[in-house]
Length: 173
Image (cartoon, rainbow, N blue to C red; front, top):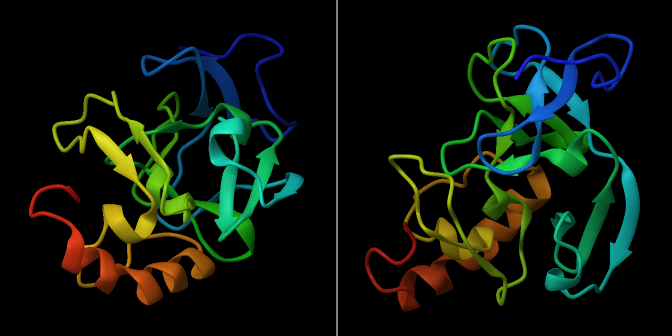
């Protein structure tokens, strides 16, 4: 939806919080973004050695390290065909053109390294995977790592061959 007074995250009016078709409140573009544009930087309290299920809004930085994000990233939702991904220095970047008023989404699998993590997906994308797993399992069938932070791409590089060998065909999709 359209931003209301007080929904803007900062004075630049790049991002606002609004009603999401995915779930509750979501993170929305307040302006046009080109692929590669920085949307915001991940900030919040670092959590070490946490059990993933204890922090539904946690965003993984690497094995056993998460951030409990502050606004606006505490309102970002998962989508199997996201329009944003983390890059270097915890920068959330546009993967494609994002139009004003469009919800900004992230593939949660690209921020999770815990091999025991999984969640049901209800994003309703035509490419929905229905069940999400950590980066090394969700993308085990890929030849290159997905768009993700350099550390999470490193995790994928070190672990995906193992998951490729043990994951039934179609399970990683």
